[in-house]
Image (cartoon, rainbow over all chains, first blue to last red):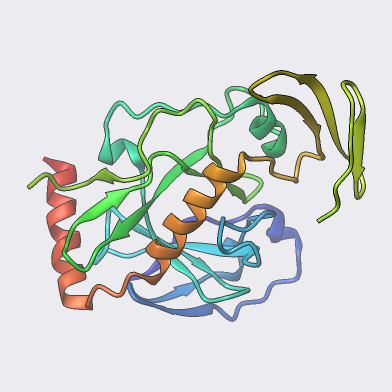
Length: 159
Length: 81
C-alpha cells in the first residue's frame, strides 16, 4: 500500500483532479494524490527549479519517506524525521525563516532531514540543513540556520 | 559582475524589494544588512554551496536497489533500537 503523507486542505476548494501522479523513484514506485502537492517557493539548493514536491511513504522504506520533485529536473530524496536519527535533535527557525513560513511561534511544523546513501552502504543525515514543511499551508523550505552546530553528515549507522 | 563603491550606510537595491546596505566597514570584514521579501532566501554563500553539493550527491546516489533496501532495513532497526 502506498500513500502520500500529506493532503492540502486548500486544494479541497479546487475542482477535483482525481488522476494520481505516478512517480518512479530509486526508492520504489509511488502514486501520489494531486492534492498532496507541496510548494517549495525557493526549490532546494541545487534544485532551485523544482518548485513542487510530493512526500511519499511506503512500508518498504518506513520510517523513511521519499521527497520527490514533480517539476524541474528529476530529483528524489530519502528523508527522515531527525528525532529518529538523534532523539534530542533541536533546531529553531530564525526570525527570517519564521516570517517566510508566516507561522506563529507554536505552529506545528514538519521537520525532515535529507539522507545521503553512499555506495559503500554508509548513510548520513544532513542535520545542518533540515527541510521544514508547514503542513497546513503545504509550503516547504530547506533552511540553514546560521547558528546550527549540527553536522551536514551525521553518520546514521555506527560501525 | 557589477562593481560599485558604497560607503557606510549606503545601499544597493536589487530587483523589487531587495536592499543590501553597508552597516559597518572594519579591518577584517564588512557588516551588511539585507532586507528581502519573505519568499527570498538569504544565505551565506559558502553554506549554501555546501548544501547544494550535499543535495546533489544525495539525489544522485546510485546505490543499487537491493543494497539500498538492506541498508534501509538496517537503518530502520538501528533507528528503532
